[in-house]
Length: 270
Image (cartoon, rainbow, N blue to C red):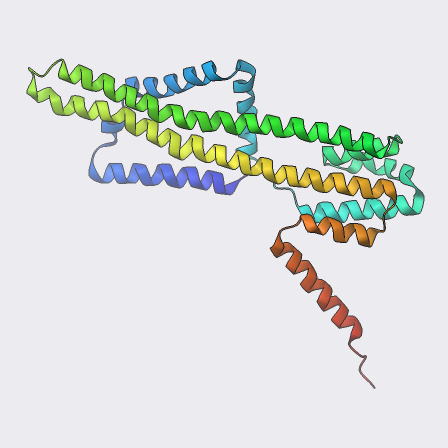
């Protein structure tokens, strides 16, 4: 479960509700027709802009936002290096026994191609096709959320215009101008909240998740190439570590330096 996403939504909604209740009643900000204009209009515009199957696909991507388990790049590198060692000792066919225990589907597919004896160019082409399709699915998701972030404030303005028209049509009743103006502004409030607290942040998060997954897929692809060619595991690990962040690379270099220092330390004389 992504604690940051849930914490962000709860804190955002909570602070807004608290600020509302501190100055007025919550019922003043509840208006069903305004919700229908903003939510219904945003959904309608999204269906016009995107095919139905792509809009429905976004529902499955919501699970990635709230229940995303972040992959450990360092653990993935360790797994690839171990597989590389095994392939060098027992041949690439010896890796086949490990396929059922590998949770990373992309890695499992790549190793299966290696075991099946597919050429390196064939493996790379297959993995790149898988990567492109994955990126396309993710891009569709964050693009839809980004567009919904544009539509909702626009329909909030539409609701405000409707309210203003209704208010101006009844100027002969001055006592109703204030309440009608308040209702007219609520739709803009709804549109802004939906865009800036839900749709746009979700679009950004999906885009970042897609970028992270693309890096991991490139890492796996390089690992698969090394395993197939029987590359030296140490050389392979050094190459794959380049995919890690600068901070992670510094930690690895620091740990290696400590390890070499411990080996050089002379034993105590008795």
